[in-house]
Amino acid sequence: MEITSTVEGVRSMVNKWRTEGLKVGFVPTMGFLHEGHESLIKRAVEENDRVVVSIFVNSKQFDKKEDFSNYPKDTETDIVKCNMAGAHILFTPEHDGMYAEGFSTYVDMETLTDSLCGQSRDTHFRGVCTVVAKLFNIVRPDKAYFGQKDAQQVAVVKRMVNDLNFDIEIIECETIREVDGLARSSRNIHLSQEEHHASIVIQKALRLAEMAIYEGENDPVIIQKYIKDEILSEKLARLDYVEIVDAETLKPKTKIEGKTLVAIAVFIGNVRLIDNFVC
Ligand code: PAF
Figure 1 (cartoon, rainbow, N blue to C red):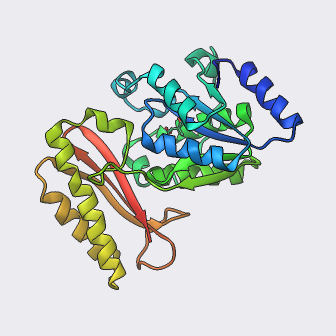
Figure 2: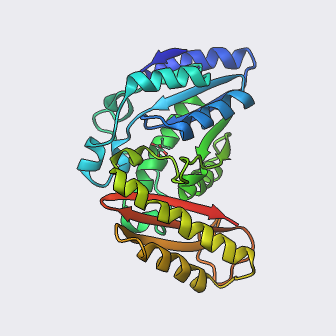
């Protein structure tokens, strides 16, 4: 695996592959890789001739400076994980390499970004869209891989790719979970043992809702109440939102029918966790 921190470095290697007719897969990450990222890389390796992974903690998608500066880092272990998963290039740009002095162009989306996580994270998706667009222009992959845990991010990236005519297929990959059901996330490291245990309530609430829908309940208000009550039963948990929306447009549903996303965000102590299911 080659490691490069320059745009020119990635471009020259990818251009060479392109002249050889090879298909390129891409997994953008912010590092501190866990099994969720590893599964994205492995899937990309299965479906492409070559795979690029990027690690860049994108300051523009953090609302609070503390969240950005506290973002966990372990580059040495990340390198080993990327290598083991079969990546061919690890792209690790510096902040100034991505946002040089005078940087002033952003990708702003008019729909999809105000609801769910966008309600409490004002400029988050502007930052995500901007960095993902830049990374897509740098790497120019055939396919890019994202986890379903961040369902809104997947919907937003798909919309952006469509709206801005990126010739890239977005592949949504299933959420990878810890043994107790907690969705793998770089934030899980911030949970104490007690909080980790308490976070099981998220899975319980979602499974309860899924079961009720499976058994025929199609009223979003009732499903939301089941979820709220379950989350309330855990004293360390505080519900940020529970939304039942169309999986593509993210518009709220008045009846559960068609492809529906049930998404929640819950604070366990100070750690904000998200999870969802699609039915
Ligand atoms: O999901 C993430 O880790 C980030 O939002 C992404 C897509 C790498 C953009 O910084």
